[in-house]
Length: 571
Image 1 (cartoon, rainbow, N blue to C red):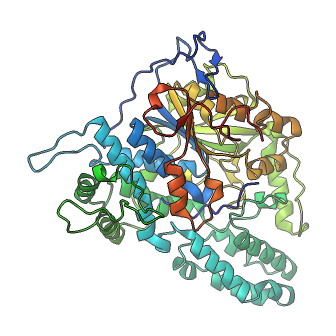
Image 2 (cartoon, rainbow, N blue to C red):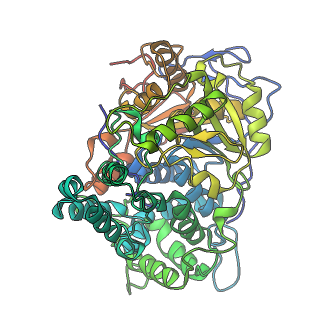
């Protein structure tokens, strides 16, 4: 059982040349075959495969623990160099967007001094990128609730307000008064202080005049607030109930400003970032942004002249940036296409075919108020649920061609969503059930968020990645992902084929076997208030691999013998 998550606890250069593929040889396996090396298998890329990225990261989405991605990647950048390919869904798309933004920043590879510009070495560039990933902790601390980045506290306060005013009881006796109370609490002005970009659909639900339907809608609005991001699947109502947050607005403002800052766009001070990187990147190697035990860390690291700290130096540029940044930036990173710098694949679930009409009919039933509790009648076949990817045209062509010849169910469900913009991706893939209802894609299909492929190793293998590190946590597949899939028609046989670790042919098992390495964190062990402890765990997580390329990292093991990380370990 995995712990509840709340997505809005988010933390938020020269182009990286894709190195020619150096095909891995594993125990003399012929081209196209999988050869197990200890417990972490390597795949021999077919001889006629298109050269692809040299080092790739497959990211498991993890809600508010997204900083575990940032800090894990930072440690690997320090140890192994830059990643030039990534794949993931849900919150992982935010990670990829931020990392690609960092790659675009003009100061990332500028190691010059007063005498003029000088291109950083690959190792220096990787250290600077690692520091920028770590600094997301400082960005979130500086921004706070005002920019919607640290939404947990704001949502907790909203829930407290709803409960203290007794709105649930008021609905039963006076729906009209309850609507007025909720409209006041959910007004944009009231929520601005809490950093919540409210979904206007909730306000529309409170505007109906029929008292019976109004009471029904009010209970649904309460559920949207109180159950936001608890990641528990009890019924299928969360496919139809509007979520609390407006993901379109979040993409165009919160995420856009985050990307622009790290890319050096708009009012970002490129010189200030260069100073920060010049002063702090070398000293930050091996350090957390904030040490949970009070030891040396980046936040308190002093600059060369002793006049300030790296934390203060960074916070000052964030404060200046936010004071000048537009609430909805124009010509922003958010409207750039995926894959223009980083070879990235962004995943989401897609309801297609008859499932679209079935959802439309069920949504009408939900909105009528006929079913105040329990499941909404929704007749959908799991064959109509696909695993979609956005990416560059060449990347999508590669994964659809399936050059590795994978036969697992996950690969068979793969479809292309085209080369979308980050605005489209970040307003859909992170918007999972419990955070949003099913959302329309441009072609008329629907997405229920990026839960289906939380181990996107196989897609990266088909992309031609020479080495793939899977960033994940120990444990079986999440109850949330399997619960959503079940409500979308997944049968027991489908579950076995996709997610069952006791089945060596399942998509999850195959992904573990095909990873060159598995970065095995324990992020489920930490509460929302333990971000620094979570960072410490993620920064020093064991790396399961038999590839000597990674031997410089001190916690390498051929097998960590942990469920969710080691092939064949199911319980």
